[in-house]
Length: 144
Image (spheres, rainbow, N blue to C red):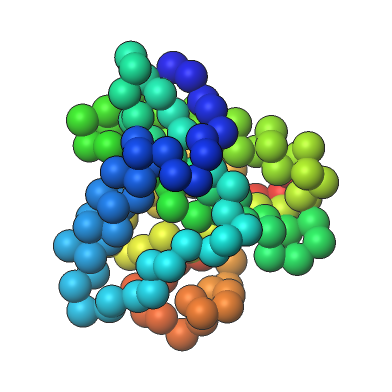
């Protein structure tokens, strides 16, 4: 597995991002959200056997704090450690950028994501930003 920093117009990344939004919309049809990408997002792409297998982005929120966005693994590649490798690479990148805390939002209908984040040392925190007050949102943080 190779983890790369793709250009924004990478077709494999674009396919994964569309699939991620489609999956979110299927899980949360009553909660349509704005899925516009933050222009500050810096993506990592997992390449598995020559195919884009997953992606994740880091978005700076404030000095020392970065938000994990668009964590997604193609269903055909799940169960192979892609998400764990992506998050490890993202943490390396975050440390290099002097990020001391990572935050993220996931949802109540994503138990596999919750299990992954908790296994990797993220802990629940109060909902932040636009997620505050949303009963479908679960927010997590991790000190680096």
